[in-house]
Image (cartoon, rainbow, N blue to C red; front, top):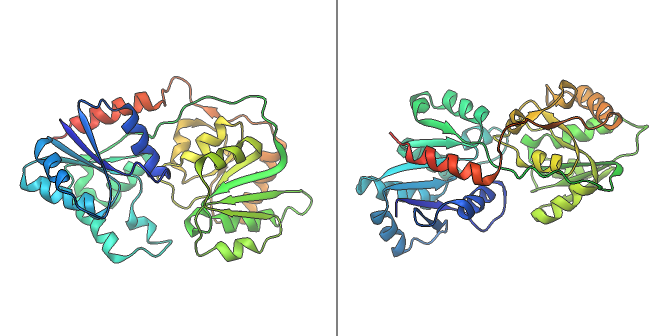
Length: 316
């Protein structure tokens, strides 16, 4: 065994989907996987002793503890970062202990892999002493545009629930200006500080947290997908929505837009600007969908798993 990969293979949220897909494509004779959990098992110690490199996906006590054991046994280690609590705590409450676990994990990491080029630059700015140890591998997506989908005119989808950094309350304020357009805004995602205010708008259908398969069903019917994030280290949902022929309106902060050919009229340059958002929603609904994936880029998880493996092995 060369690599021990510690991740979450059960939740099926954004970070977990990375772990699940890498579990599917990594060679099993090279990589052994361990599920993140609260209980520390004896077999984890055995795996750490027998591996050469410890990979931890995301921030967890078990991951930080594994880094400590790894140091004792002179193992190289790698931290895959799907986001950073140092930025997230600007928008929502983050328990202090979790923030310190992240700082400790970053301090211990021999190498850090970010999930997008933009996010890797953010990390280098936040942690300049680590900048030479930070790499990036974009998340994968199977590019398979679906055809013959029956779109519902005026059906708009967004994800992020009531989390302030997702900017959905601002989307609601923008839509409220478009009195002459019949719109239904579907809001999926976890509750947050903005949830109750979002629910007050008559055009909102607030769904809360839903399973991934339910989300893709909504994408099949939605005309427009909006991601108005103040902070988005990657952003898988817009890419999936494009696969289902949704028109896209993305904030400047959505890192996954670097994989797209997308017009300025489909980019929100100021996620707080209600008038800009209202104007661009109107333009998106009127125009044809002309956003597409950049050509000659292999975004498959098969390719991404190869890139991850190469980066993990290339630890100084």
